[in-house]
Each structure stands twice: as C-alpha cells, then as structure tokens.
Image (cartoon, rainbow, N blue to C red; front, side):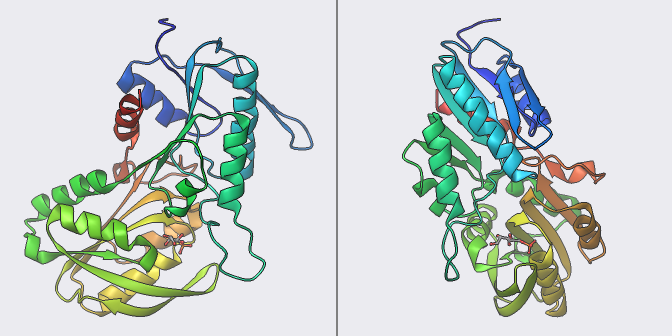
Length: 307
Ligand code: R5P
C-alpha cells in the first residue's frame, strides 16, 4: 500500500459510498473498529496506521444522527492523538444543518454547535453535499466545500426528456419551498427551461401548507427539486397542488433521503412518474435501485481538487 496516498476511512454510515469513492480514486480504504457500551457510550478507533497520513473520513451524520456525529468526533480525536497529518471530513449528509437559525424564541442554533465540535476535535477541512443552507459553512473557521447536485439532476432529467421526447418548452422546474429556490433556479438555467416556486408554511414540524405558487404548471412536465425529504409532506403538498393546477406529469429529485420506509411508501402512492434521490444516506429499506443517483464521482473530484 502506497503510504503517500490519502487513506479513505468510513465508520458506521456511508460504507458503500466510501468504497465507491476509494475505488474511483484508487486510494486505499483504511479500517476502523467500533464498540457501543451498554449505556450508549461509543468507542471508535482506527485499525490502520494513521501516523503522518492524509486521512479522508467519509461519514454522513444521518440517522442515528447523534451516534454518527459522536463517532466522527471520537474518531478524529483518535486520529489527532495518533499523529494523522491532515484530516478531511466528508459528510455527504450533514445532520443538524436544519437547525441553522433561530426561528422561534429560545431555539438553539445546533448547526453552529456541531461546527464548533467538529472543528475543535481537529478536522482540517469539511466537504458537504448540497448543504441545507449557506448558514452552516459560515459557522466554520476551516475550509469547507459544498458539492451541488445540479449536474446529477440535470443528467437524470435530460434522460427523462430524451426518452419521452419532451422539448425544453414542455418542461418546468419547481422548487417546493423558498429555501430550495436557488437549487431550482440553477437547475432550470442549466437545462434551459422555465422555473416556478412554491411558498409554504409549516403549522407543525411534520405538516406543510401551501401559501402561494409562482409560475403556472398547466400542461407542463414538472421536475421538483429539493435537498431533503423527511416526512414527505413538503413534496406531497407540492405534487398535489401542481397536479391540481394542471401539471401533465411530475418527476421529483431530492438529495438526502432522510425519510423512513412509511414515508417513502406514502410518496409512491402519489402521482409521481419517477423519484430520484442520491446515496448521501444509505437506506435500510427496500427501494427502487434505479432511483438512486450516486454522488461518489462528485465527491472523488472534490477530494482531488482539494489536494
Ligand atoms: C426544508 O427547508 C427542506 O428543504 C425540505 O423541504 C424539508 O426538510 C422537507 O421536509 P419534509 O419532507 O418533512 O416536508
């Protein structure tokens, strides 16, 4: 094994993705071991020799978010204590990014706390995929890189257009809320199609109501893009509203499949032609494999670019 090459390591999340990235880059895959004590205390450490090495730790802080986050913090501490040279944390899905501002009185800003924890344990740089908002990178004082999904969704939707003989005029991109406006706009520009936006309110954390819709989906093939699907309520409300306004077909692309199986099954009951999501989160339940777009080559390119 060439000790000058960066060493890629995964912990208990992102296993398949880390292997794909290592294989694309032809970098070695290091090993770690972990143990959870009866009270939930985590122990995690490298088995591979890390002294003097450039380490790339790939781990989404997805469900269970706190366990995966603690694994990162403990592991990085072990890397530091064992003289790793450089530590890059790749969190394809950065859990806790949704709590990035105070919306209600007494709210915490957990994304900023998590950024401080990651930084203080000794990470040198962080790579995210489609970070929820640009507040989170601002909480860091080390370099951060956000990988956008425009090219992945562009490729998938272009294929849909080609296979179904849709012209650019037939198609419209919609963002299901204001937070995803920049994603939708970028994709619409990249595809050369028009853009519409939905404005939503959240009466409760798991409930969505549509306030307003900008742009008409009438007789259009609509692609909805978002970063996260959790309960699915944002997406379902968007699909139903756009259908009611005359959308002729609806496709969906989202980056992070935070959702549980019930929510996924619920999505399938709605009139969606095809759902695309990425492998930033490894799903523990059966799903349509052809729906999954891999972020591995985008991550591999970013790792290369930062070295
Ligand atoms: C919100 O700001 C995000 O972009 C997603 O729209 C949201 O997290 C989706 O959540 P849910 O699926 O629970 O509606």
